[in-house]
Image 1: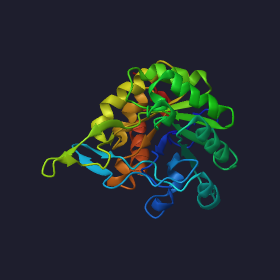
Image 2: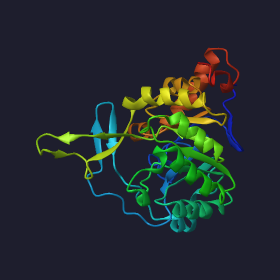
Image 3: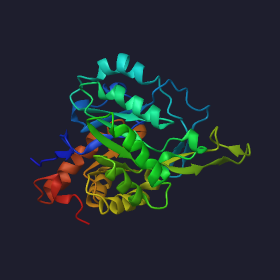
Image 4: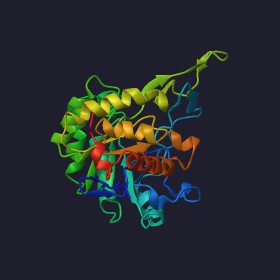
Length: 301
């Protein structure tokens, strides 16, 4: 049997396949479709300190080899998660990871502190691509100073594995990854969605309610692989790769580029059992190529 186990700081994964936030609900929604315990980790939908309604509809649009979304972090807030969702997910036999978002340093830290108190949540993924209201709408994650400030604030109150999700909408993603590492990030995940836009030419209007949204799916994969390679050569902490992974071959490509683990997002909407198919496909590929462990292919390129 091929050893698929990997480690992200103190976070132990039985296999490197995780689900990307916002594409797998809280995991509960997929329990009848895929054995959740066979997934390396489930990153639940974005959680903010307070309730958020999200953006107006329409907020999803199909594109060539991908999709645009501007859901806007719709969720019922951290307290609701702690009181209602956590009791339902805490005993799932895999790593349940909460994606934490905010609009200010204080809101990020307060949300992270609430999740820190939950015994069976071993890690958070910090989404630093949210608008920084105090800085005129600029996202924290597009500057080294902004990224570092969020990680610093959260690291003071969060004591478990801290993963930071990076934006690709930047000039030098490796530089921002280094800034996060310097402030105590245990890992970085990338890429978040690329900014895009689609227009309905019959209505002469944007297809999304707020005009622009995040592009995901196979169309972004070459960009994501390149950025994972760049970042894996710039930092010493583990890198988690995502962006357009549809099958085992895609996942292996990311790991050869330097990812210790991967996340699957848009593909979950097409095939709810894709995580299991990717995991099994990776094991078959490794066995066919004489590898005893997935560790043998990490960063070989």
